[in-house]
Image (cartoon, rainbow, N blue to C red; front, side, top):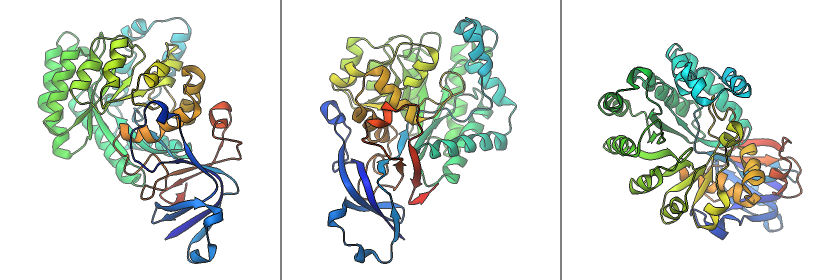
Length: 413
């Protein structure tokens, strides 16, 4: 089946070479004005200028008139926690009243709050809630997503979360869905003073169970003061490697404790957060193949300092953008806002932010051969905008809904 999309005002995000974009290359978006795009069996077949096309060659194709819309590759959200049992707006209100994270955690809030709520929710209910959220994100332009566990913190509950993600993979087969095991998200209350006991549970019970059912693609650890140390992160990642799980790691959100250096040595696919970076951290990351994934909406919601995007880009780091959608620190998966916030608060250029949320983000979840750019052979997961004057208008008009339609594998959602 073919769809011929004609009268595209601007076809943006064209990539001839499927590579990670760094430095000056990140600020360049190749476009074609007054363009066409041919979709065949859900994938991009051909594209070019309307001047070049001979419509009579496509008599069997469904004609889709873009009416001057700008078309971009769909967003790739490479860091989410969208499987959760309940929201946490009561903690949001507590923070507004001046309570600290420690005070909220002391009364059972934070990650342990989400873990407690998840214990009592059935797998089916958890799946239905997650499927609804993912459907909403697709309508906002997300065409690939990574989803973490980490709100289980017991063998049964972590497996339950990962089974839900596996079901999402099957139900939403037209978008790439990646699963990350994040059992090392926090220490459960009963292991607060027995870190060794919980790490033993991860290594000797959770990981074998996950491997038996083939439930995860990656392994993650929250490496931070008060959570998992660098040495503990290394142990968990090495154990995951025995089952073929590559690291994608939470590091440098609050403190620089050596997580970047260890992650690079572990050949992590990505290091995520990066609000707190030393000059040495930046240089180590720049000299590596590990992608730094920035999560500006978490900094926005928590009123923290933003990631040093300009320093990272100018130093040659490969960076991506993601939503960190979760009920505690980033209760939104709207990648349109992530792109706008990256420009407004982190001084990224619009082209840099768009590339970081598409091409580089695809690399950050290893779906670069399917997603991330307008390239022949990749999935036709596309954003059709409402009339805009340029791609710069997308982050500029941050409060406007500028998405007209979203195409997933050749079909509008």
